[in-house]
Length: 507
Image 1: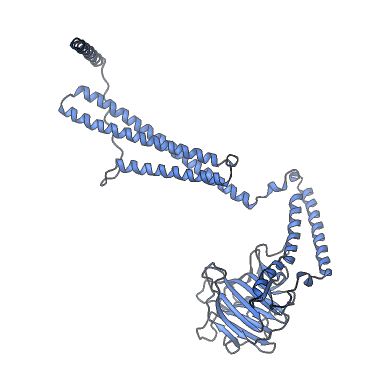
Image 2: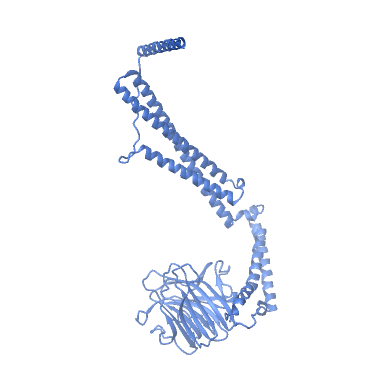
């Protein structure tokens, strides 16, 4: 537990440092493009959120406040669930300190109905609109709202759509007409029930507000298309970012996966450094909070050790499984299953080989019996057929032996691959798997060849019938048969001796 607690503490410290200082390289990387007129772009972590590990232990999202029916989780924030009359929103806790900005929002709007309601809104306002009738946020806002309206209130069949509505803090939103009388710009886009998350890129730079939409039909995150543009738009120099959603008689799930904010700086102007945004007092405050967190962690660690004395002697790392350990375990489990399957196949091939050998032995005995008892023309024809059968079965045995050898070699390779110490690296492991794959192809090819060889094209395969075994012989017949065979053998020996003597005299 001590080792794991130290790693957690170090990870928290490193994460804080990276959040503070990680944006600087991005700004420097954009400096090269600034010469051509592109603004400097720097990530602002205090106005952003993204999973995983989105929520803290107390259920809050760092630097953000959620209200209403919003439900934060580890990977996303569900602004509203697919229930009737739901409202929810999330807002930044701090006002922005930069004039120009760009936000990238990734979200999903899903529901079972053919028509959804009411919709989702992205905000930049002078004050937080924590709750209200405009897509779950307050009316009479001072700023701009980008509305993803799902329900067609005015019956013009122009929803789902994206509407840009500005307000000076005095106007009431026109719900009945879907804000068409107040819209600064709009585009018709269907953002419900898409295979991939929908992405919106909203840029406010030099009094121009531009909206781009990724329609969710492709996994390409940069596949944006133009939606709307408003020029000569004046927004508050400082404000809160937020996102809200609401449902009515119909309902959808409104899930926000990420909200990323970037500060834009005009070319030629000095890019603000991270140190200018973090006063010394804030740094001391964060350091005190970190030390307090470390003390609480050590205290809980001691309490856990007192409550669980049986696990004090065990290394903390043994109680947890890393991602690489899990992947390695799954690979070995798969290899074990392959190993068992190949062993089963090897046993079945052994059984087939034994059956073929017994079959050949029975055919050979039948050939011997019929050849000795029926020496006529019909017996000669049967002998030729039996010879052909014997040759075929011998070929079958040879092929089965080759298959058995291939399976044994595959089994050996799998056994070697199961032991990490026997492999010399990733290359050798890959080579083992390639060899296994090659041998499995050889086994498959041999089996197909064996089936095609022994199966006529117009008939289904069936097992050959064994010839009838000879009946039991009496003792008298057995001795008579042995005596005849002995006489014939002696006569054959004498005949061969006479032929050899005559040949020697001739030469």
